[in-house]
Length: 118
Image (cartoon, rainbow, N blue to C red; front, side, top):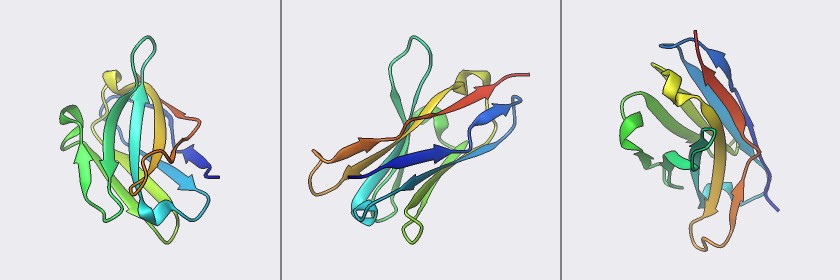
């Protein structure tokens, strides 16, 4: 069983930065794609960024140039560096793990709140 624990959320002013972390338990982290999703109140959960087991990143168009996803396989941790934050970035951010060789094995974290407000 895999557990994902997010941290690093909080309240930040527009234009500020936050770094989210997601630590995974278990032994399949290095064989999995990792993703960050977000869900604002009343809206669907959307992909923000993802990174393959080999370290290739993918970003949603609205986050390109502002967010950076990275991973440390030695620490079983994925990060999301968020810069130039906007009020519309306010949401609960969720970490996702998906085993690349079998996508049926997919896990979610509990979420961390990010609020961008002055």
